[in-house]
Amino acid sequence: VTKVAGNVHKPVLLLDVDGVFSLFAPGLDTRSGGRWLLVEGMAHFLSDSAGELLRSLCAGDAFECVWCTGWEERADEHLRRHYGLERAFDHLVFDHPPSGAHWKLAAIDERFGPHRALAWIDDMLDERVERWAEERPGPTLLVPTDPGVGLTEEHAATVQKWAEDPLNAG
Ligand SMILES: [Mg+2]
Image (tube, rainbow, N blue to C red; front, side):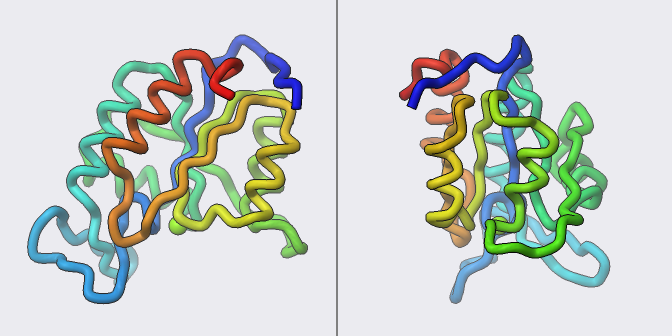
């Protein structure tokens, strides 16, 4: 697949929340490593280290960070304060009728088109997403996470490295 430079914008960093920052797994140890956040009556265990990695990833202005989560506008409202993020991030809205595709793809395509460089961190990247990424003409990096662990240093390093030269990152 030939990768085409879409435009001069910096790469987009799509951020899922549940399974990336908000951890869940059977038997997850919540005694340390995170803090609880109550959102509309629902308690979420937010990883401290994932938040720290997010602050450093987005501090350098290398990305346009965009929440890509069912939390929609609540992600920025709650997580910016919880994690002490310096800037507000935009968010995607998922109001498309269900189809056979992964539920986030239509909104991503609509907002960013086929050519914009995109890195996407999510715990629910399935084979439909992998196929979409392969067929996408723009540079596309998928970063799957384990929902009980969330964003790791290794993921952050991968994203950082990719952003230095998305067109040639392979
Ligand atoms: Mg998720």
